[in-house]
Image (cartoon, rainbow, N blue to C red; front, side, top):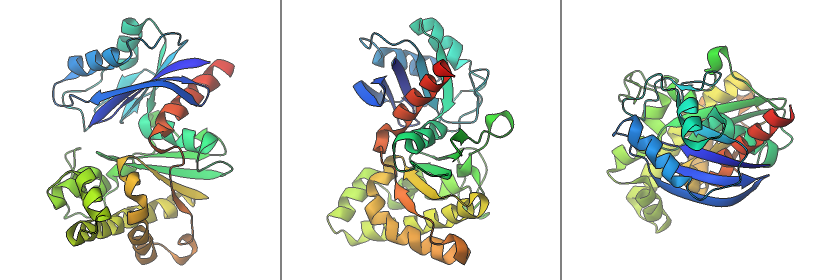
Length: 289
């Protein structure tokens, strides 16, 4: 089954034609996150031009969402979005049925079915990028919670005296340990911090060490809550997982109960394709029941 999949992030948006677990074609562009709804939808449709032959489409998007009604409720990283019927709008523009899914949920399912989480009874996926999101898979099923709101792990309160979050509150995990938070502390783009760290820059390495410990603090909460077989880390900052892993482990050692400290914490096996492939998997599941 060939499907058209969109991944709408706060920094960039992608479109891909996916056949099974193979990405046949992919395009991307910066997300006009501050320009309102119309430019984003126009941009998604522009990315999909020439991607023919799909029988259905899916959109991976940041929460909170009402998946059943195809609504984006109030994503903190997209200005002016509130109760947007994105599935219906895209379906009308594309002439295809469009399923909406939380981006971290889609990536969690991708890693469970085809990536680093294969064989896990309980998988927790954390995506660390512009913000922080989460997805939980239990015995092959996404844990959705009431109204599908489970997994908003970026809004755990980690430090009540911490910085203001996109959501308007203070001290959220996302405000402390996302890529945006790293950029704020380091005064430069996370990719530049990572590149400098790989070149041996002491200041960049110190920033990543501190950041990894903050991630470890938040991950400790997830280990306590879900006792997963594996915690998989994806998103843009997972590109620096090898640099972050020692300090993530130090953060877990400092904050987690001893019984939780040996939980495998691994980088997403599918990399940045996790959400695209997971969304394709969910669309196929829907068709085949």
